[in-house]
Length: 89
Image (cartoon, rainbow, N blue to C red; front, top):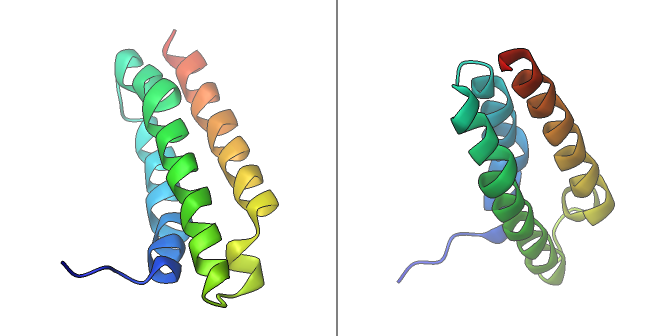
């Protein structure tokens, strides 16, 4: 089994996946947005924090592996998606 570089995976989540989720949330129905907030984002945040720890272990860039910054990114994502949810109510 091939294991992808945790730093590359981490960078992809931060630069592509999380922004895409937030952007697409505005196009989703109420139930799908609720699912994003309740399930998808918490799971993705935990996996991202785990990747950050693995990336830091192999000497990845400090900014990329900064857990405080990652948590802030997810807090902003939650806030943005929550606003979109309120618009759907």
